[in-house]
Length: 330
Image (cartoon, rainbow, N blue to C red; front, side):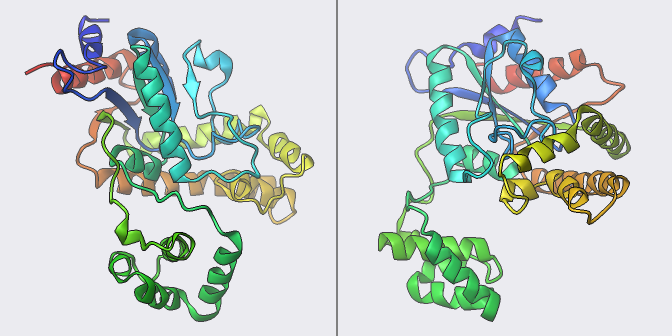
């Protein structure tokens, strides 16, 4: 690989005056575009470590359905935020942000390049935009009461409550955004401080270069179909059965995620296996469209075309040029 890769790593700890923040590469894009494979190949060439930004790969035992890279596929590249929790343990975007920032600091301290890889857009946005999350402990009983109010009287009632408790935050939250309304009310009642009184963002700790992988829709859909067929051949149904046998109920949020929901419905007799596969392919394509809608709105993402007519070497060269152009001293 050309010398640009090495030059891109200079200054990970800052420039000679100590004024420059550490540099972090983000590789994102819709599902099935080859983000993991590209990141691993890149990491091998430049001396990097990978931090997963996939909301389901944090769970142990959820391997096939999340397309989690095996130890063999990782090829010795250190991966972080994979296999942290059991499927019945909660994991929030605030948890991801906190742990990802810690891993970024650790990786940079070793003189290596952190590469954030994944398609969970909210995770990436929270990290890159340095969202501030009040460290208010979750009050499960309060959340259940607020959810019951929303079920009975609608989310607009929660918005009215928030308007009384924290008018400034109420102006920023849509009346139908139940999840954010509940969290804002919870923060106010648990901490005694309105959400609007907390900082909007954290102090920046890194400079991020965002790279998105994109491919023609038709080819992406064919890849999704092939991936689902491969998941079934690898034993995805047995994986779900095994998780249930360990006591992880099909009603748990991770077990209702994409793929696990469709296979779970089949196992409960709500569909045939063929119907479950068809729905999983359809729903994954719909999910990829939602991902692109989110990502396209972020003008900071530098898009790189991938596909069967573009060997990975070309893709890596494109990323190399982006790194050289964005991170080289002017």
